[in-house]
Amino acid sequence: MPNVTFLPAGITAKGRIGQSLISVARAARIVIPQRCGGHASCQMCRVYLEEGSVSAPTALERRKMREADLQAGLRLACQVRLTALDCTIRLPESKLKSVVQAALARQKEEQSDETWKGWNG
Image: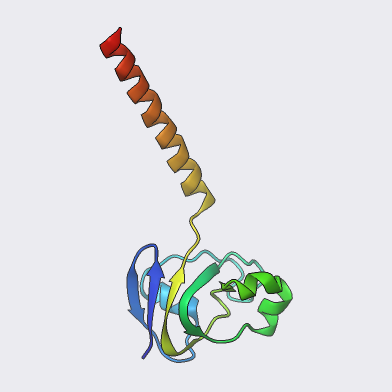
């Protein structure tokens, strides 16, 4: 039974050969967004193969994605099937999360500037 490690969470889950990556993630309570039910049409379930081995890209993946992205390890979790080898998968950070983190960093910096001015005021 191959192990799948999901980054950045660092959670490792066991899967079965031939099982879809999205199914393994769901069983491990890792959320990979999708709305097409695994038909590769929404392309929301994009993940990066960091290391290890998984199935070759399906015809649907090849139709929906650029060859350069596939070569770089970008895959659709609904189409990827596990092989006998372990693999490490990186989930892209959500755009909303990165926007919120940037706003919080700006707010923290502004607060620290105000505190500094108060001490030197």
